[in-house]
Image 1 (cartoon, rainbow, N blue to C red):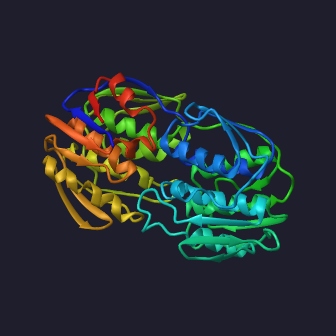
Image 2: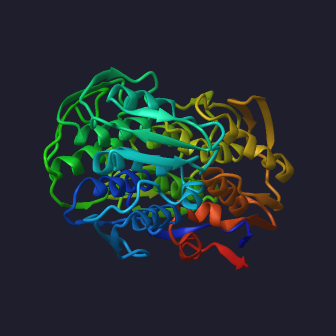
Image 3: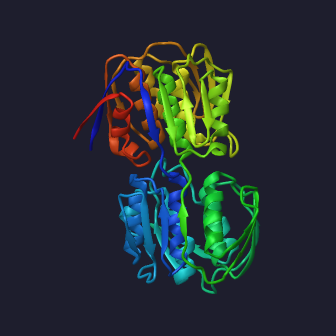
Length: 418
């Protein structure tokens, strides 16, 4: 495992370009399994999670070229197995997205317990609800066994939770079900819309993308496609926090302006000087101020994936901020480490934290317990006096491409110790 060593207190300035949306790349790769024809994905993020998903596809019999680059060429002419590699499944929450396409191709799928961040707290309830409605039988044990003895059937159902990956599982299965499937209370995030757009180019009729009600007419033979991923708005927001917390000035390229609105709105309330111009997010030197409350919400609300970073930003904003993440309680627990850096925090309960900002942080050893809090702790280390050691770095590299090189490009003093 690698350790990132950060010498804090530097004002960062420069430019970085974001790559494609991590949360779009995984379902798009899974969608390639629905067709025997070749698919080409461009602007793919060069991150650990994408490499794991590509390896999962290869283990099932797919040909995947370009791993480690921003262009992946995938052909799934022959699917040899109904069971993705359990070792890799245990590293990636998004591996569950393979179930629908495997059911479409083979009528059966076996899946070990998916890993990733907070595996014990993120259930498959929404996925199971959708699949059962479409005629799938499942048996839980050491691994889930899914069977569609009569093939996937179109259905009409209401998801009890607007789960992003649950919605994506439903869409991927519906794309293969002959007939019209209606999904209500669907997630509306940009990466869900992107999956719909890609499937439309493959020959699936989809109405309502970006709304809570989807109509999917599936079952036709799908063709290959070429698709360019939209820029990752969470990565762009992360770099905006890095700029703001160091009093710096960073220009982030490759962004999709509409996707940034929920983030820019909150940053603007905190007096972070930022603008979206064409495909660029420009963050200028700012003096952040606290706001009364920041609450996460499903799209188009403030995303939970940004809550760790905005909490760190609040430690350097003058005044008191209440941050409420009703979705994932373990994100805030990971930030208790900030207290050891000198931050004034009060964890009210697993979902709420009060931050009294304006205190200088001091460097220390930090533990990256999940992807987003890992990047947030790097931001804290950049603002702190002295040296911080953050490990394992691989946790952050799951979702941020070339993070060390990019930090150096904007003036951060960082080193890596293996």
